[in-house]
Length: 157
Image (cartoon, rainbow, N blue to C red; front, side, top):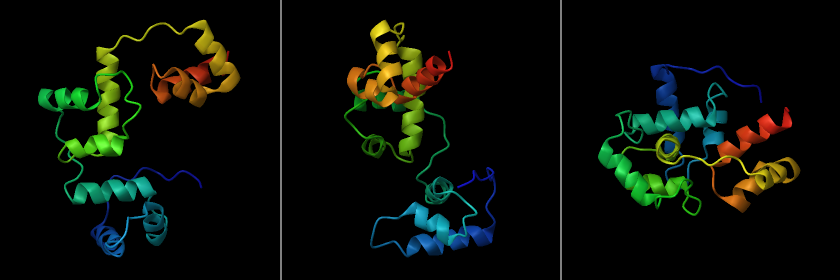
């Protein structure tokens, strides 16, 4: 599917259509790809989910407080990369925060808190041979995004 342009504003009609479409899923888990299809593919599934979250107060745009960051560190266990807990579970500790918001804030906070060591030769070799997902699951000392970015850099050398 071709990438859609980023949309900033939803019309009132589109918002009402989203409300009625999502209300059909009340008895089951919302399938955002199906919602996007029913909306005529004007929006991506993520855009629909984000709009729904904002509309229902689940997506707070307020800045993260020190208390929120401390709780995030506590919930994530103080590790540079929380590997055993899904972000959807972590976000349940926060009122008005989505899994994506928690992950992005963790990435920002951990980048400031944890100084990453230099890339070891064995990790770079594994990255070239086995790829970023293997390294993320095997070494567990960096985020998957870090491995993906380094993999792109290493492959372009």
